[in-house]
Length: 262
Image 1: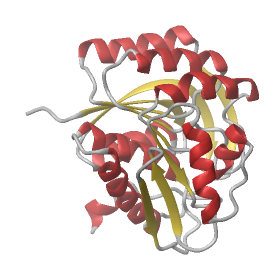
Image 2: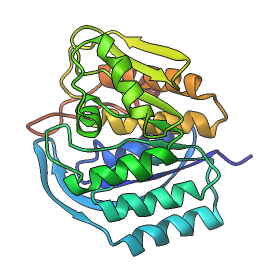
Image 3: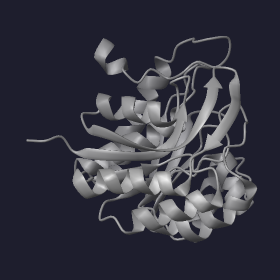
Image 4: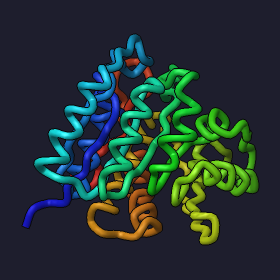
């Protein structure tokens, strides 16, 4: 029996901690076959992003069609899309694919470097989010998209409602930047699932957002429900953060292979 197939549509992180590299490591660790569409190339290390170059829409579309038309996919995950043109092209591609789509609306890197043009925000709202099975914004991305500043757990509900207005079936608001436990809210507007985990005293957290979205996509590809895929993804990411390690002079990555070393 072949492995479930998951396609990531995202940027390359030369340091290996986030982006397509993190996605593929996550997929391997979770027992699915990972495939990739590169949308942008970044020069990136533990200190930040030194440069970014987006690929032409034609190259992104060709990669996507090449994989989907021949190999097929059980889930798609999107990450860094850089420009309005790429956002709109990818939204059109995933809308035409009969597979769940996990949209990580990447706006800034862990170091605060912008990874999405300001002019692309409206395309994310009107084209990409409506195509999402699950959207997974962090608090900075919530503020970018909705102008809502989340400062407490109570604000997570308001933020989720605002993102759902743009059309994703589910939204997972990542509350990792709040004080206290790491709390995320998953909701489709009626059911609420609060995902809690103890906060680990570990600053090596590069790639957490990419990893979580890829883990959810991997669960969906295996046939799990959205709440169950999100719960298992949260467990995996929590372990990966706890095992995060130093790399270079700045923020190190989470350990995608932590279960392999237990």
